[in-house]
Image 1 (cartoon, helix red, strand yellow):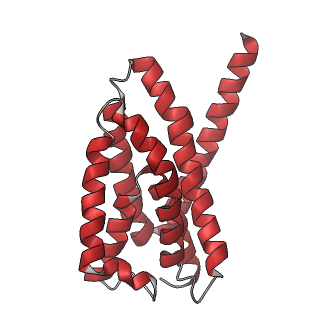
Image 2 (spheres, rainbow, N blue to C red):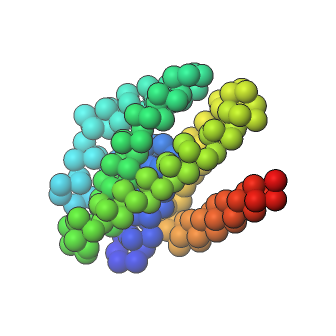
Length: 189
């Protein structure tokens, strides 16, 4: 994944990690293991080892069910506040092949910011609004949608990084517009 497409994929994968840390890690690990679409350079090539894939699957299953249980999902979001940005940093560094192209620290910071930004938006704005408006009953549906979006976004990030870049720009514009609209409504009341 040379040059610009690697960086675009890195942004898409990092954004996906903000929703679910383990889905994009698993997608990258499996694509690197079974295809030539993505070649992980050392030290990132360890992601495609069977023991790491097994650990990602195990942690992903635990996170999947923890995010669906009321009350536990809030604890899970608190724990994931640390895990998702780190996963985003790892994905950004691994997929952008930063060992060669970009300084690893810069890439990891970019991944932390992207994944952390998506996670904070989800955990501080979207989930509380869903919990408040549905009494918590909508959280399971939102969690399943987040998992599906993370999966699709991860696959597309590797396959079609330019589309992911456009999606991230549109999503960011939507979030900014939504927050701006919400702030204006609060001013009116």
